[in-house]
Length: 197
Image (tube, rainbow, N blue to C red; front, side, top):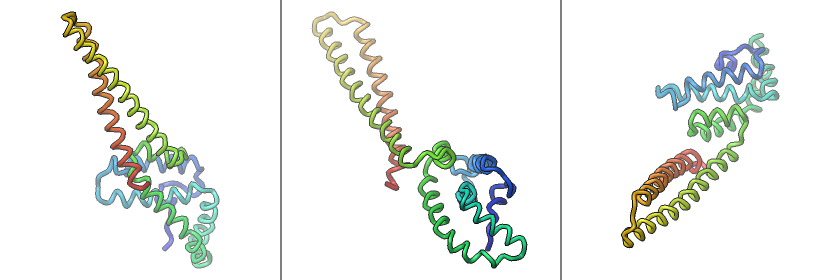
């Protein structure tokens, strides 16, 4: 059965690469799991992604267009068998990519698929951010402990003032906020990337 990828994306056969990209972006924002929880949306989104995978690549699109023309001239058997043999690997790779990327939130999904950011690079960037936040959290832990010792020292020497307590609470609050942020980033990294490492 011939699949009309142009129809799936809602574009014309003579659409430019930019028009195909824009159509995919628009449909992704409508059917991505982040924004559409309908049971049929995931399957619809998968078809949209598969169409985009074929039509965004000039070589694949050129071969697909040959089949497209023959199909609508009632010569559908002329190329279809070879085409489907050749494109099995494309389709399988598109399915692998879809399963890998579908766990990403909408923004990152669009960056990976539209802006050509390598998935491994994005994964590394998120890991680096997690590590930096963790290191910053450790530094804040040391600073908070120093502030605590400072408060204790002034308390023991009966020289405690409001400024010592205020500094301690400021650093403690920042520290607590960074811990929560680090935890959130690490959990998001784990959920999005480690499952297919």
